[in-house]
Image (cartoon, rainbow, N blue to C red; front, side):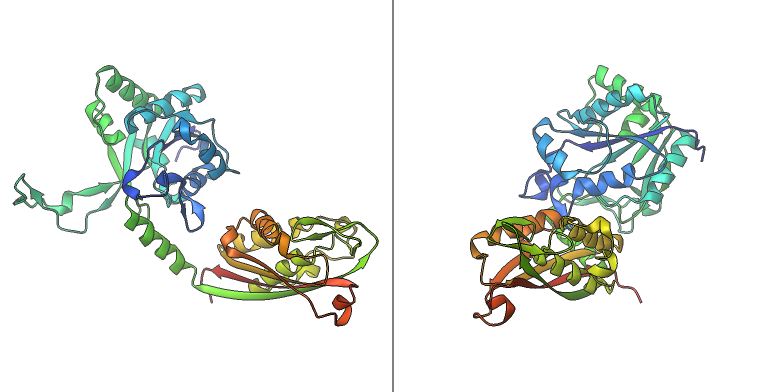
Length: 393
């Protein structure tokens, strides 16, 4: 492939996805705990040969879009049109200032596009000027008439299922789209059809059966099951932490500043709840403990906020291709009272870890005035974490 080719992407995300059922536009719904549009965009944003990713969205979805793709690089979104065809043209026009050589046009409802498909799309467009990914038809296809009766059986050997990203020389597909708009043609179902209408020869390259489009509620159910099956290594870890009280006017518990008559004696901020959770996650990973990753002997952790320790542990899970299924922490203390702050602490852990609050539990108990916690000399915390990882030997 000619590495000098400048490649941009139009990510079409302006549709309403009504056939996917309730839950809002399908591109913003989560699958496997990740927004569909994030999965679709990430593959392009992180591809070494992609210059720019141009999303096209419904202006009513601006807030959802921003939240869904946080952390990914992309161009300012273009406003979508009344049809997919109009939305693609809007994206192409927005990209014109970059003067790309090649453009890939992809549906945001295809969240499982691989780096290999993207590379093949760029290579094919560089070589042919217009190309689409396809997969063979494996079922027998029937042509039916208005009565519903079979009128023919085409030879499936010559049939292919078209996917995206469809790839083109930028100037050629932009002019084809502009010409279609001038001629009042708005009935094309994909960009290859416009290219064919404009007289271009459209080549094909190998697609990917996993690069399927999410259209119906059944598609979401099937793909959720497939993703879950890939994370068949279910692990649980436990953690424990304790800190004594010292001078101060507050304590940090599960990322929440809690007013108190004492503070913690600790190297960091002493957040026993988060420290116990970090050890639980690292335990599930069989990856040491909090002290081995953040040694108290290291001065840079003096007074450190414990949210960064929890984020680090979560990143260790993500780096292994895994997901956190549940986080559960129990505080053991006489005071401060945890009950009134329980949901605030749950929300804090959820925000820090990126885990839905429905998967976070915070509980509290006393030790019936027994031991160091009963004498209010400090606070202890226990935690458990359940994670799912891809199965490996």
